[in-house]
Image (tube, rainbow, N blue to C red; front, top):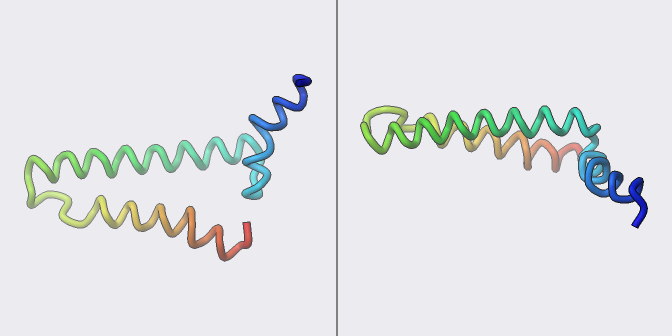
Length: 77
């Protein structure tokens, strides 16, 4: 397989399928990763001290879901 075809498959096709460039997709994915890490820390702390972050982590996950799935479905991508 030619190098340009591999580069296209690995770095271009998926971001383009959701209406983003490679760099845009990278930044969005890293933003999601940061929010997920924050939610994970809140869940961990909630496990240690149950009165902390009673709803914060689940709200964060809900917001990420809406941003990733619901909004993307509305734009048709």
